[in-house]
Image (cartoon, rainbow, N blue to C red; front, side, top):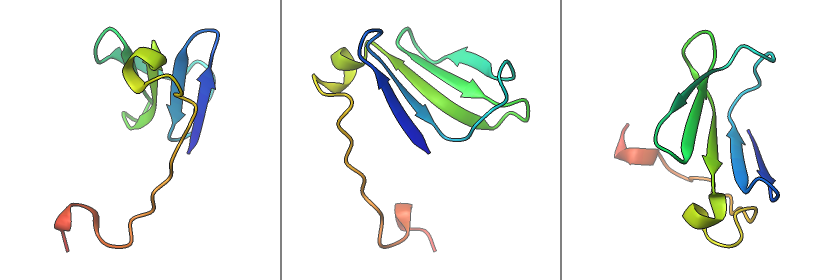
Length: 75
């Protein structure tokens, strides 16, 4: 997974998996969030436009938390 922030465009991109150029299918989730899907229909990335408005004034600051138990309480 890769997270990138473009300060000039004020856009943050969360890349979940790499796609070949030109193969992404983009779907607007709302006016500021776009989801990218691969040809197989699986989610590949999420773009957040106007990131500072949605995420605060330091959208490039990331805190990584690693779960030590099952997420969602499942077994």
